[in-house]
Image (tube, rainbow over all chains, first blue to last red; front, side, top):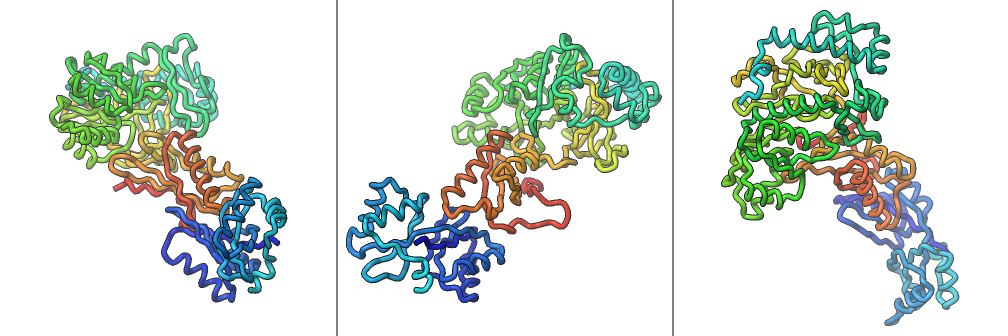
Length: 143
Length: 433
């Protein structure tokens, strides 16, 4: 239910993003989804990869500051208002989204969005109750 | 203009005889009255009567800032409380401030020394002196104030800050002299420019600048922009405050040390060995007239060179060059003393770990800037931007609240700060030429 996400601290310097992706690529780690949040000084690269454990160790060994977080991959109906529907449910239940980004692949007729919540367990309960599908980590890693 | 011709131009032999007499009395006094000194002298086995010549002073132990802290607040005082008429204190770098006291006579001495300082700058009766040094526990404001009153100048006790008001008063009251930090003088100039005021057209003719290190280039810059003479002054609260040494406007070549009140030595900061004048070393002062808190061989940590050559102004006191650096790692940022160790203790308060850090001091226009680079370790890292920004902001706030300096915290990647082989380099001071 919960998906392992890797986050990397990156200074705003040319080439740093390349170094991360290059390192992962050379070690056969496939990036499923990513988002880059940045400020004037630094950025945080968040990654969903096919092998989070190995990616974590690899980045750490190469002196990157890495964190692991659990996120949810939610199937969002690929229609106008689809995402608004999900957010509406979250809002009604006072669940705050820390951040979100899209997964490239689709699952059946749905788009897949990655969500980070402070209260992940509550989010699972609420979303399931509202009839939404949460993707299993295994499925995402193997896409 | 020499305020006190009798003392300021004493021939060397007479001056040294006077110093020896005063020093002997001072050593006897502290040995009898300050338990700290009795213990210290006994430990190294010296007695006040061992002082036969001025050279014998080197047999006596040093006093450190830490000794004042250890004896906080009044343990170093040599007079009973009822004789203390004034108490000042330093900012308190790592917790407890350094407390100093003055008797009635100490205040008179201090006023006399500041009268010499201001006279040396060419300020006299009839001048209007705008005193923009801070008033309060800091010694700058009141020190300059009393000196200016003593020479009969009209003092404007405006204290620091509030620049537009400073300019208005300078214009309306016709200030002819200003005392403040040199960086504030440049700051005032910038604001005057914005306000459409030409400093060169104001009646002001001289600036008495101190409380922070500055260069000769900066002097020329201020003199050009303000159309004034700019002189340097030196002092530290432990010795008396401003007025320990001052530049004469005639030569502007180093600061005359008031040697009839303070004996100066330069030492090798590593070995403590006394160096001949003319060689760079750490300044060490012994007060020989102070009553409330006399200090024997106080280590200032300031590195400079003492010049013995006579000055064209006629004063016979030796002169100290501008302070070239510190023998500890203290930084002076916008007049505030900052030790890297203070920043360290603020950083270590986060999650109990000390990240690698680097202080970068620079100058933006006329203001010192401090950037604190902090390496983001896994313990500090968060996948949420807001957490990292909150972390940076809270460090900035603590540094402002605890140390009193505004800074910018920049979070950087691990190992992006160069590791040194020996002692970690914690500071890059880009202000130095």
